[in-house]
Length: 472
Image 1 (cartoon, rainbow, N blue to C red):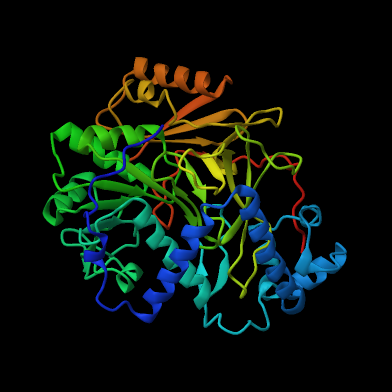
Image 2: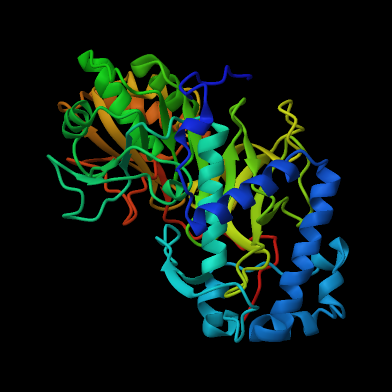
């Protein structure tokens, strides 16, 4: 779907530029200029450029990273600096378990000049396997530049107020005031920005909307499930956020009904971001369409089928990424646990690879008694019929074993027997299997430590997967 570009960018972009960008700002502008050139290249030229960077990364890893020194020797990659795509595909995938097992053997013993200081970050561990990743000052600079690129792509007015609800840590950004920063962060090295304000994600929808009405934001960033709750709360209570120009989502799969709810409640669109703390930006939503452009200048992305072959447009496969600018801890052919659908060429003219949609994680799949795995996609399409069954405020489905689905619900009143029967029928029809359906009623559905919400959780051990994994 082609979208009309938002009209909230001032006509004169130069008015927003800082009088003297900082040294970091000048570096970011230089990167943005490079990005603007590369994104117009053909896909073939972009791929060739990526393999030049892959060669540099592999050559570095072969000399300074013990894990990859052994791996490249084992797979007879004689000339890592000139690795071919066929040789590349012989390298096994690295997953979170492999990262944990390898430990410091994944750390580089020596960085090239200019990569700066090393810092450590920890992922949220949605898969149950949190990891510690090192990154460099240079890789963080590219992260900041890509943040700026997203703002520019979507023509945001930097002088507006950015409201953020991401932090779920107890006591942080607490209601009623939240917290306030003078700028949007790294982008202020280039542009003068308005303030950024934050509120804890675990506040109730009523508290969040009360806060939003007081801070009067131009832009709102939060997780898709929280955005959906806020939009519906505003619809139910006839509340408009008059200054809001655009919403921004991240960290969870974005469902179509979230876009619909934001349009209905506030008459604004949604711009989604696909990223990870361990790998940086993966893809940004196209400014003219609802699909995503892989950030190919700094990341090589593969979408692989069950046999490890590249997926074609329209096919869904496993997302495997290689960040190209982080030499402190190279993550080469890193299986991040997500699945995505490959898209075709974008009419916008950018040659960057298209992801039509991010489908979900392995943990979002139901396991049938015979071992078959199926996508649940519980919020895509007919979830409205589920919510219409009764006074359901929140929901979560948990596969307890091969025969039982537990339905966790937050409701306004006790459900009647016919309502429970209707939910059982809905679940068995949606999952296409005669599961036994049980109910648990709670006051709130818990989020992960990073504030993410999962509508389907499988507690069943899946059968062995066909793709080879790295073993350390």
